[in-house]
Image (cartoon, rainbow, N blue to C red):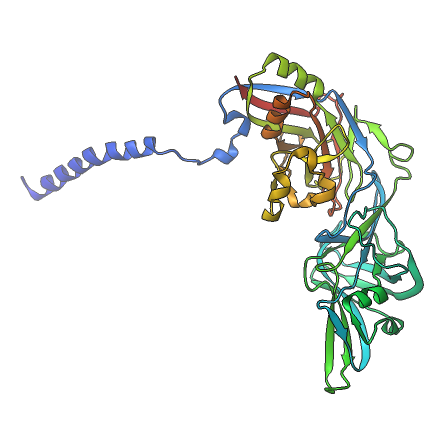
Length: 437
């Protein structure tokens, strides 16, 4: 056999042996290639069914807890559908240690905020007129401080200044008037310092440009600083006080619904449209109880493999799509997390592992720290939100109380809002799920 034929024979022999192995490897090993393009409802064996909400409402948020959240908002926002929202920041000024001792002359006192967001336009430079007042009372010691609670302030204005804040700014620094220097004691315990300085109210006045400043309250850069010339050392020195992290604080939200659907009502039927507003604005509530009870009676042993809430977006909705937060509303009026919500912080695990009836989400957990498939907005089928809740649906079937009432909120520290189709629309809110029995 010549060399050419010998090489050809070896090549055919190699292919004869290798090809079956290659095909076997391709067919035996599973791959997730393209799985992200597949509708999750088709990935589970079982029957597909659909619930349609038989009742729906849009309700004003009357009160919520914003104390010691790790995010804050200061500013004003006007929306043609949702009206005007104003947010004001209240904070303690706390010592980082048990005592305070300052020698020398104070040169200036500043408030610094770690900027997290500008909205509604993050690329715009805003002209904000800031005002700072000292509280007329000691900052409340209780933790049940609701977003609609106002605290009295001194008549003296310690800052009234216009400042430009742009997209590249990472810090916003406000310099207080010298009249604030006399409030600061030369020496004090932590308790005495709080009693003297009390706390501050920071706001952006309504004659400012329409917009809001989002601040990071967990950042150590959000603080008060005293700049002084130390008479003992002769050096320029700085003393840092806490705001946000390590100090009590909360955000006050107020709303003016003049000219909006909520101008004369606290609750609107959701037959045609459902309104979901930001910053403690309106939320949507859907009741699937009738169909849930009928299904539970007909399928007492059903196992839920997958379930999604579909929320079609109305044609009148604002262009920007907010993140939505889904919670369940119990009969006693408290909010509890949907069972498919997963905390982004392990410190919340213990809260979510409690009996759901004992977890008041607006009291114990920051809503924006929870995620419930709420980041998924689909442009298909006219545009809709898809939110996963199989465990919650399974729980509702097992408890036997026949209640499936869902509350849909926008994120509390996000300016975006939306309008959903109501239950009388052709494309209406629905719960689609896969089950077997």
